Image 1 (spheres, helix red, strand yellow):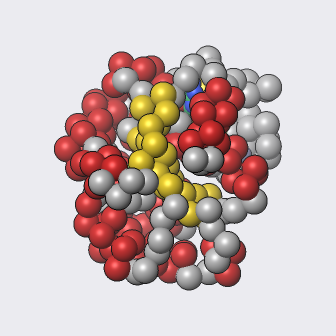
Image 2 (image 1 turned 120 degrees about the horizontal axis):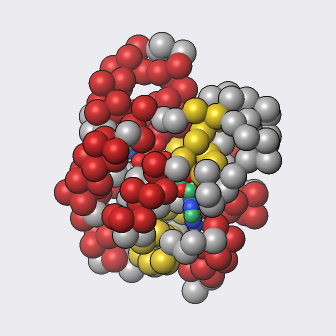
Length: 210
Ligand code: AP5
Ligand code: ZN
């Protein structure tokens, strides 16, 4: 299964990718996580991406397309994968086509802007392994610490209220047109991002069936 998870920032793409990759035994690939890791390691790519990411704008297409081309060539992607956060522009989607990647399904997780603001302002992420938590909806067992690795939970730089609004604007202008792009190819299914994480997982898995 070659799956794309589409949706606004904070719609729950990363949360669902984690659940679904366990189910389907395929890797989940998040361009956001790859870029954040590069930033932490201060690689050339990370430094190039830093200002865009912190401002909530998109990193240039050629940079992210290069990341994906490299990642998809690795052995663990040959039986399928989940893309979380890529493509984010029509140019990126066309690049996937040009690479000869045949996507099976695109699941669009729909959540209102109002709910997005609530979700992102309550998000905490593990600074060591990147796992996402939410103060209300997915609280860690021990306050401030990751359930998986015990790492410290922090607020992402781009989860400040003004940056959240800028990211939503970028999403509506540049990423939302991908819904039409994939609907025209008959690949798009939309699920409503429910309050309960497990409900959205159930709907997403169902959207892969038909
Ligand atoms: P990226 O890391 O991809 O961020 P994003 O798309 O803005 O998405 P998020 O990670 O914020 O949200 P999510 O949908 O994964 O939600 P999550 O599961 O965490 O990208 C960051 C930046 O990198 C971009 O701004 C850009 O600069 C750059 N970048 C990345 N890819 C790029 C590309 N292709 N091109 C150009 N630039 C690129 O959930 C959010 C919160 O809600 C969590 O706290 C979670 O616990 C909670 N939650 C999840 N599901 C539910 C639920 N059902 N009910 C209640 N709460 C829930
Ligand atoms: Zn952790």
